[in-house]
Length: 124
Image 1 (tube, rainbow, N blue to C red):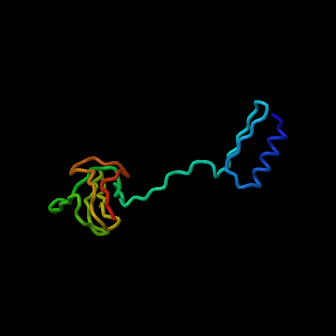
Image 2: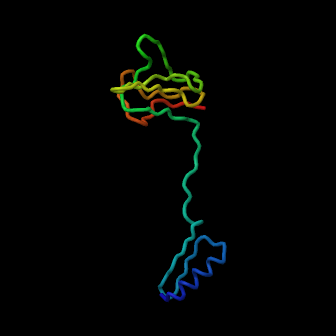
Image 3: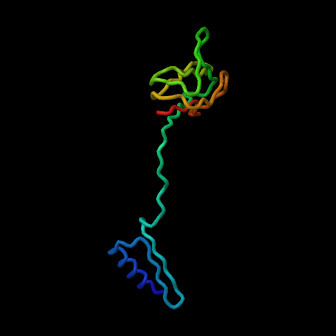
């Protein structure tokens, strides 16, 4: 196919609002797609907020001598304690980043966690 023809078709297409163009002549075919013709990624919204582990360590529901119970569906406020992660040298608190309902508990007392692992999901 003639490169001049391809260039002419490409330049012409820039002046139109077409997103896709196919041209065939004597068994030769060119197909041109603009950025607008590309599939758009799916857009979705989620009402769940993940509560990630702040460090690598062992998850505990509460410090020794304290009592805390968590159940799925219970309301939580922003800043509420959701437990702690104990490392070799430090204890990191796990707190609710937002208020809502505790929809999913992904960790059990004494469970090993990795940094960033979602421990809980809160529904706003």
